[in-house]
Image (cartoon, rainbow, N blue to C red; front, side, top):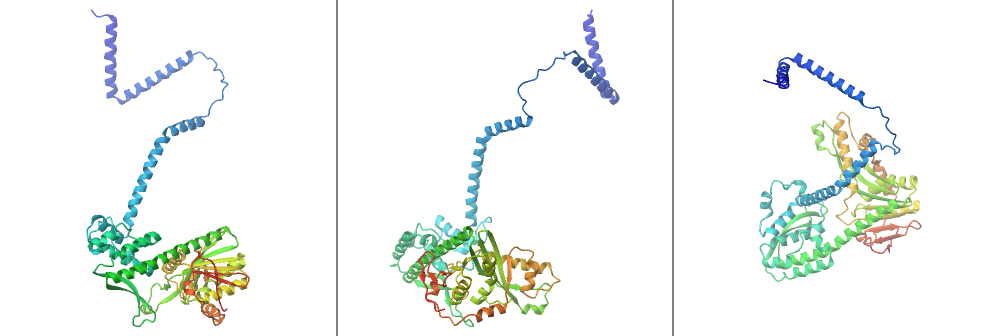
Amino acid sequence: MRSPRSKNVVYEKTYYEKKKLKRTQSKVFNKKCKEQHATAKAKWRLKKKQQQPTAQTPVSQTPTTPITSMCKQEGLKRRRANTLKLKTEIEKLRATVQLLTNKNKKLKVPLTVLHQQFELETNIDIDYDTFCRHVPEHIVKPSHDGWGTCLCISCLNPQMKYEKLYHLKQKNQVVRTHLDGYPCDLSEIVKDEQKTNEFKENLMKLDKENFNVIYCEWQKKKLPNCVALVSTKVTETQTIHNFLKKFIAEIGILANHVHKIREQYRAAKQAKEEAKGNDSVATIQLDWSENYHLQQTREEKGAFYYEQHIALQTGHVWLKDGTFSFGSISDDINHMAEAAWAGIQSLLKHLVEDLEITSINIISDSPISQYRNKTMFYLMKTFAISRKIKMKWIFLESGHGKGVADAFGASLKRMFDETVNFKPDESFSNASDLVNAIKDQTAIKLYLYDKSDIENVKKSLPKLETVKGTASLHEITVSSDHGTMYGKDVSSDKDKLLKVKF
């Protein structure tokens, strides 16, 4: 016979099973059960709370720490614990970035250099055209933009001959023996006098060989219907003896050329730093941009045969209080010395009269017809004496005068194009219309000059005699007292007094 205890257990188990089944079958009953259960729990909590003694909590004498302070302390602890791990991860990331940067630089190397490196590393003789056809897809193919323009003939001709010798290394064991281990860029060799002499000695060892060399070079030639000599790329065939004789002579010229490039860049940088540190000094770098071709939107077909050009002389000015760029714009496309001076007259007056500048440094390239000539020397001297200021003109080495001025010239041309394109119903007939349209949209200071300004400069010029050694001068200084002129063949040389008869 079952005991009362066992009967109750069986009854409760059966009751809960029936209740559970009913809750699954009826949503209303299930909801009612939940409410009863929640009410019972609430009564139980209230009863338990009332049974606890109401003892007063002693006041702590130590100040409580705010939650924000505790969070900061915990954050510091965690950061200190993970600092070493983070440093290790950062170093790994930096190493990866450096590796990818170096790989990216190699991918950006011109294909001519990659072609030479391929032949050196694989000892496979392959012409450049075949190499370009088999270049992988992730390497940029040759394009018109990569041809190379505005290159210096003093740098280009010896480099082309040097590359020709590199090609001969794959076919001729003697050439490979004497020229192995040199870099692909000839300018890297001529920077060091010892390496240059060693390279020349190795070239002379090839003088006794007996074979012909076919190569390309740039030459100044007289062409029909052209007054001046025109640079022309020609193919020459010479014996190795004559080839080396010409190549060695060009190496000497290139070494002197590279030396002047570096010294003039150093002098230009020093002039800019001088202006940044002295409130009475201003440094200007300027250059002529290629003339802007003014075209109208919705152009009638007859206008195709008439081209209107606008001259742009742009540059940048360094001062202690800051820098600014400028552009001298004219409908007259004369680029001679008198036009160059007429274009910067307003700028020079602004510097001397408004900013009280007492020393002006000017940096430019060195074309004889534009900046480095007796006309510009006379105008410099006259302005320095009349304004009682010191003037210095630094001429960069020929073929290496590109700089910040060209960037502002391109920027102005782009703004002119956008103005014409976005205002198709307006007419832009001259430089003044373009300047008025963009002057409120740019921080570049714009100056207009016309043919009358150039004629006024011409009328102020007396009959001038040529200054001896003008073509070799790379720096001209005019003193503020009596207008005494000093010149330098290279900016690192000592000043020499120039004998001028004006």
